[in-house]
Image 1 (cartoon, rainbow, N blue to C red):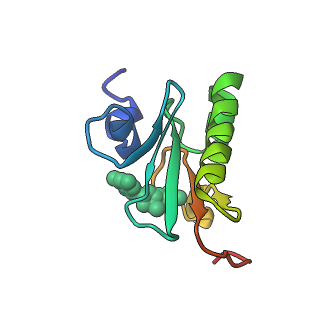
Image 2 (spheres, rainbow, N blue to C red):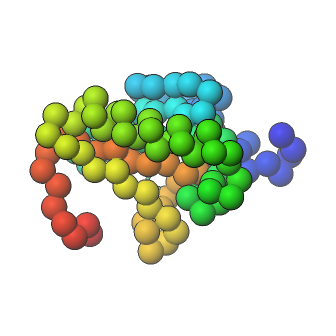
Amino acid sequence: MTMTDPSLQCIFCKIVRKEIPANEVLRDAHVVAFRDLNPQAPTHILVVPTLHADHLSDFASKAGGAQVTRFLLAAAELGAQFGTDGYRVVMNEGPDGGQTVHHLHAHVLAGRRMSWPPG
Ligand code: DGP
């Protein structure tokens, strides 16, 4: 980690390193998942790769196959665990996507019927 490493200031990297608290539901070598601070559904979990990547396109080129696979499987496992009648997985990227935290994360939303199109 260098002084210019983006992970030093990244809020989700701080959660991964346990420097700030989060309501965790899953942790392993490749992912950490925790409850969103501002939930948009009865269940709203963020799945975060332990490897810092700003967004999906960055992650896809930076991460190994095992990390990419684990990220997707963790979202699916949590959706199946918390969604009794389905769930939604969302990844926001860039200003048009509504991304506010620049560390890739998947939102796993469950516990209510979702509408379409999203806002
Ligand atoms: P996005 O807009 O897709 O970048 O979503 C970022 C989400 O992260 C947003 O729903 C709020 C959540 N969030 C931001 N900071 C924190 C934090 O410190 N802890 C937790 N648990 N969630 C956070």
